[in-house]
Length: 494
Image (cartoon, rainbow, N blue to C red; front, side):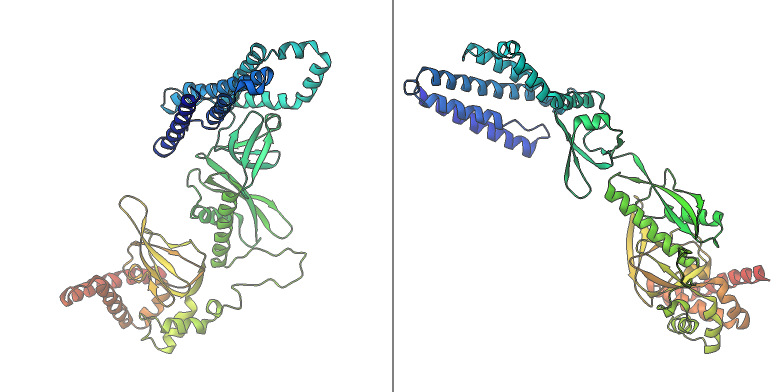
């Protein structure tokens, strides 16, 4: 008889293990509970294999009561799983809160324990507690804080101000909600640690809650120079923020004049993002502030120094980058450009002061697909990626350009719209040549237009691999288009 019960217990244990493994691997249902059933089987095997005659009447009775208790606990755990979690996993009704499942198990287990101890072991726990006023007072005082956390946990589950996966902030500490138990709320913080907050603290505190899919506002401030008009500054800041990766377009980013401080005008910025975690906020804020610095540098502006610091204010780009401030260096860069290498020294000296160097940070868009084009760019330092929008959305990388390479010359010569987006891959310096910059050369030497059309057409034909007849037709059409375009620019200047 004992061996048959042992074999049955081992078979049940194997079935439980196999069933749970199958559910974990092949099913989205809540895994089958394993700890309590296996413990109950172990206690049952020990109670079955231990002869009662060797233990005596009282120990045997307690061992039998223990066996019955663990068996009942296992059945209660399996019953709550089968009646609550399994139907919810099948979609028959919403998933019940974990704290309510735990509370139901606790009440059922407590009632079963009282019943078994009274009927099998002769211990009346209810009478013991009710007849001892001192013990009742001690238990009540000891359980005061525990009961507070318990009832607060029930209140949090019934009211449901937040769910697992939400980001909440309680008393200055924030994190992602992992679970809410009978006594505590567990949060995962930005540094990866687990923050345990008593439920009573959560229930009484003023908490900020964010769901994972809702837009989250990220607000911070920046000070800009008084020389930059506030209206222009707000427009520039909003334009830069709208182009930053990770910033949502709806709701749109906003910039306001916050205050006139001692050494700067303070602007309040608000961008919207997905995710309210501290690391996500820092990443978006860092990206926005980086792009603002580069945008200000291109506009000849900078973040002002405090007036209390006695040091000369640096004007323009840093002195350790001669390509940004040295006109002679720009002329040398232009002479290495295939489009301008046949120009004489006087022509290069005339063109170089009209150009300007621009700095772009990683991820910034230099030009965008579909925008009007009126300038070409030569890469002085860094790298850029050429991206093309796909029919299903997203962007496909066409090329990666490095120092010395040129892009945008076709748009400059034809006036068409940009055919691709060019985005900086790292800290990049570009030499910009606008269409207006070439007008003095075209007016002084009209033959320069023919030379420019020939070189641009040659590059286009090399990329498209066209025949000689097609190349000649393209060059003629390009020259006519350039004559019309530069003629219109020249009339606009006069």
